[in-house]
Image 1 (cartoon, rainbow, N blue to C red):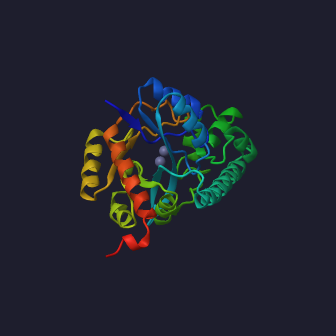
Image 2: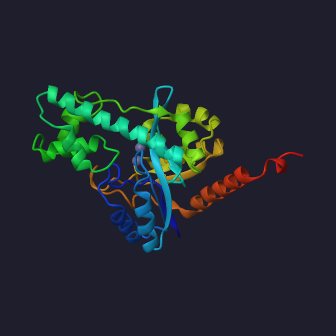
Image 3: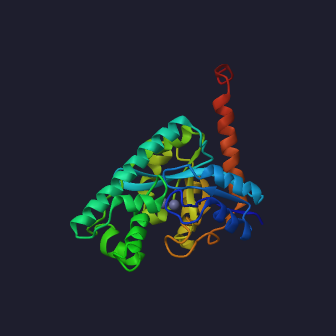
Length: 286
Ligand SMILES: [Zn+2]
Ligand SMILES: [Zn+2]
């Protein structure tokens, strides 16, 4: 049976694997298709495409956008994105600047607490344009300011800890629009993790295409429930491990194996949408 992982991160955001390492793990585990969904960036897609081609796997370019709707944080996966799309690239540049400001703010708070971490050391270690909290944690460990990543999060970086800075978020409706105009399908990531059930109807109204029913942190019962919700709202079904390499413990790739039939459905939807968008106007009426 063919299967896929449609939620993966590399060191182009807060994962630790290179695209080549990630593709290598995917091939070894027998995957037929992988999607790259780094946070707020499509930079890794070209290398990942080449690595997947080399390993004879299908590649789906994507990204994960942090958004919000009515005060609820929603992660949106854009799948089948055109990584060259102008608007996508310019919006991404804005989010990346916001992320970098957040790192500076976290460093400033740490300094106030007497922890001498410089934002520049986080940027140097991250070596990517989408730095996040795991990079701050690693920089703290590297500088000998905490013993390990857990301590970094527990003492400083977890939500409501003294150096925590909320993530700036775009509106989910805007996120769906950005994904669509870049040719992608918009999928709500790990609804069971973010507890975003209440906003599903609004996002469906705004054009949401799919629901990530299968995720490492979804129990079987949860996956079952989201399959029902997907069915109820006529949403496509996706699934992925959300593997970050070693930055959040053990690599998770292989923990979720999405049956390939779902990828076929995603591709069919995308193909029919591309066809509808390129149809000349006169053929739509009468
Ligand atoms: Zn997420
Ligand atoms: Zn993710």
